[in-house]
Amino acid sequence: FANTKSKFCVTQFAFDQIESKNRDITDSIRYAKRIQQAILPVDDAFRVAFPGSFVFYRPKDIVSGDFYWYHQQDEIKLVAVADCTGHG
Image (cartoon, rainbow, N blue to C red; front, top):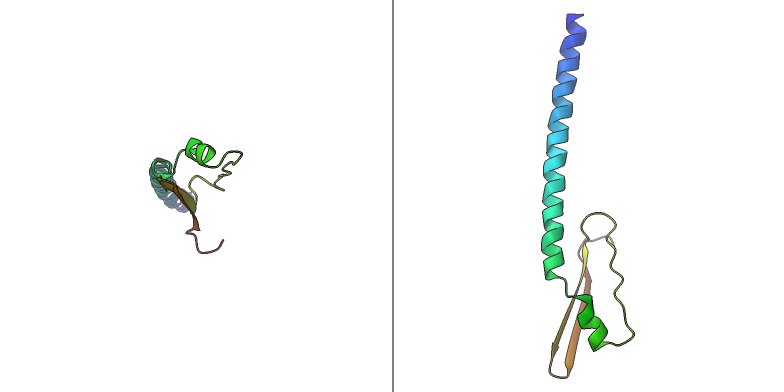
């Protein structure tokens, strides 16, 4: 019985450690999402610059490896679309 209890304690400790690390990682990814959302341009800017256009941006998970950028200066419109994950 003592051996079984010892194995349970070790297993529970490992589970708790994994759960804690998973929570830390998920919190970090959610914070990255907040940063990403702050950097991405507002969709309205695209609609004004390119009437009839739309932005389809749906990350697979919490945060995306893709991003887009838009800037207009006078009559010049600059658009960039990029994939940063290395597998897209």
